[in-house]
Length: 281
Image (cartoon, rainbow, N blue to C red; front, top):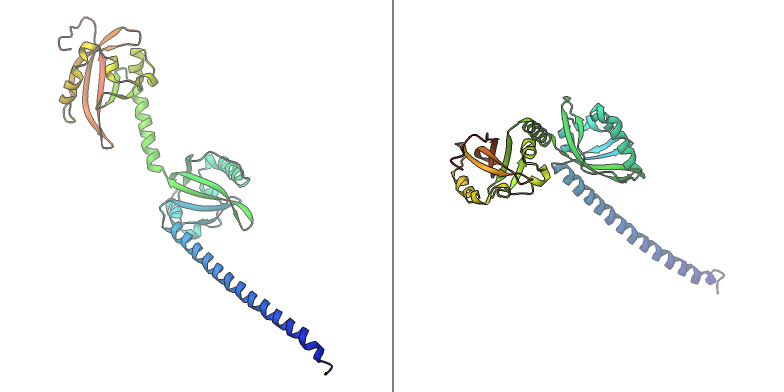
């Protein structure tokens, strides 16, 4: 036996073991390549989706915009390069910047905050844009950040403000105003209608107009609604029952209106002096 013969067995085993390890390593590398490819595909899908949605998407860390999708940039009139690495606080309306900064700090710390609150931001042209964000805490590059999805609510805010203003103006009117659906359910009343009949708004909004109409006059409701139209105003007299059981005689000027594809009956009522005879109730 040659002196090196006693080494052949152990060396062969080591080579075989090394071969197995190399094969296992190659399989691991192949799996990692597949995983890397899968992750890239997932990232591409997520990126493509985020770029195509109409809602704004933004990633913010330490109050700095790290990434934003096209819709989010367009919403405020900026180009992508103008938004990245810019302070998200500076994009907000000056009056709300301190409050927004506190919210970002709370979110990054993991605190729960109210969702769906409207925030005013300034566009590139300094126009006020109201957005409704839905935000959550995420981890980015090993550190906390805030991911937010937001919607442009500017037009809805203008509409709501206009409706609020109209409602406030109607509450200043001394005549009573009722808005009914086609079944007579009360969907809006002004303050004068409540005050003159002794009901609160909440009470009247749960009622039907027939609930404050004397039994002997209820049958006329269907007749009168068939006579109403959007083109011509109808005028008639009737009686309303107050909360304390007393009755008031009123003249109603009403017409049919369409709002949001739904038909309503709008009536303005004025109390009639007791000396006036109601010959057409």
